[in-house]
Image (cartoon, rainbow over all chains, first blue to last red; front, side):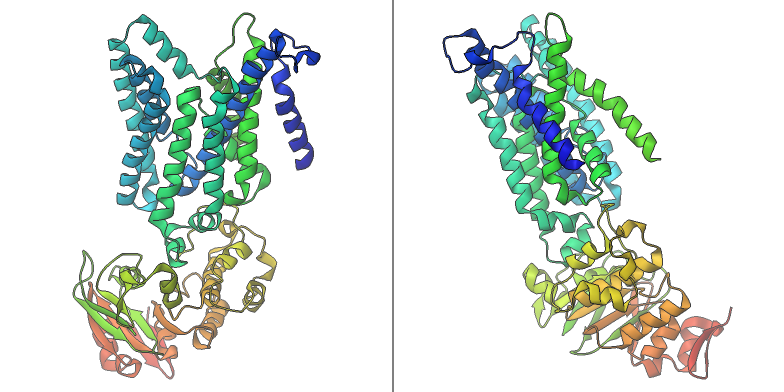
Length: 312
Length: 230
C-alpha cells in the first residue's frame, strides 16, 4: 500500500510541471526557440522544484524541531524562526538590500535559534511548553517590528513585503533553485549522519547523555542546520505555514515508527504536499495564481483537525 | 573507585564519600532528602567538578570512556517518541556486553512485549525494561533509583535476585524498601535533609538502636526480615 501511494505521489510530482494555465506541447520541449520551451524549463520546472525542496525542508525541519525540543507543537514556524526570517527579508526590502534577501532571511532565522537555544539550556525538559510560549512571544515581537517596517516603507515596498508574507514558489530560471536544493539535501545529509544520536535523543536527553551522546553539541549542530535551511527556504518562498507541523504528524500516524526512521518519507511527502498545493494554486484562479501559503493553510488546517479528532 | 568530595548545592550539603572497587552501596533516606539529586551528580547528569572515578574528574572523562564507567537508571522511564519499541530501546543500551537483547527479554519474561512501544508498557514493565538496559549497558558502576518501586511482590522478588546475582558490576541502589536493603546486605549510606548522617556496614545500620534512631518505633527487625509497623 505504501509503495502504491509512493509511486502515485512520485507520478504527480513528475507530471506537475506539465500542468498549468497555458498548455504545453511536448514536442517543443527540446526546441529552445519556442515559448513552450521557456515556459517549461525557466518557469514551470523551477517552480515545481522549489515547491518540492521547500516542502521537504519545512517538513524535515519540523520533525527535527519536534524531536530536539521534545514537543509535538514545535516547528520552525511555531517557535518564531520563520517570523525571524521574514523580518530579516522585510528589513532588506525596506533598507535597500534587495540583492541580499536570502542572506538577511538567513540571519533572521539564525538569530531566533540562538535565542531559543540559549533558553532551552536554561529550561528543563519538562518545561518545553515555556519554550512554545517564548516562540509565541517572539512571533508577536517580530510582528510588531514588521509593522514598524511597513510604516517606514513606501507603497511598492509594502506590496513586496505583503506578497512575500503570503508565500510563493515562483522563481525564474533553473539556476535560482540551486540554493534551496543544496540546503534541503544538506539538511537531509546532516540529519542522516546523526541518526543514531537522534534516536537516543528521542528517548530523553539524560538517557542520550548516559549512552555517550554529546547532547549539547548534537542539538546545536542539528538546530543550526535546520535554521540555515529554513532561512534559505523562507528567503526564497516566504513563510509557508503548516507543512512542518502536519506532515511529520501525518507520516508518524501512518507509519507508526520512531521519528528518526521517518526522515526520508517526511522529506518526500513534505515536498509532495507543497507540489500539490502549488498545483492547486496555479490551476484554481482564473487570471492569476493564488498565493501558495493560503492553499497550504486551507488544505492543511481542516485535514489536521480531522486527524486529531480521529485519533481521540 | 568512585569518589565525591565536599559537594554542596541547593539540596545537598557537604557530601563526601568513596566507593571502593567491587563494593556495592545502598542509599536510604526519606522523601526529598536528596537521594536522586545525589545520583544525578554522581553520574554527571548534573555537572560538577567534585566527582571523580579512578582519580580522574568525571567532567574531564571523554563521553565514550565515561559510558564504560558509570550508568544511571532513573526511577521512571522517560521516553518522548511514542513509537520506539521495547526491543529498539534495549538495543540503544547494548554497549559493553555480548548478551543479546532477546536473551535478557526472555530472562525477564518480557519477550511477548518486544514490539510494543515503550510508552504503552505498564509501569512495572517499564521498571523491568530499565533494569534490562542496565544489564545490556554493563557499566562498571550502575546507580539504580528505586528499582523495586511499581513492582508486584513476585516481580520484586525477581528483581531482588537480579540485583543479588552477578549481572551487574558495582551497584549503588537508592531505595525505600528496607527489607531489600537489609537482605542485600550492602554498605548503607543514609541521607537526611541533604546531609550524610550514616555511612557504614549494613550490620551496624540494622541494629535495633539505629533503626529506632532513624525510623522511630515504626521499623522492626522480626526474625530475618525488616518490617514496617503501620
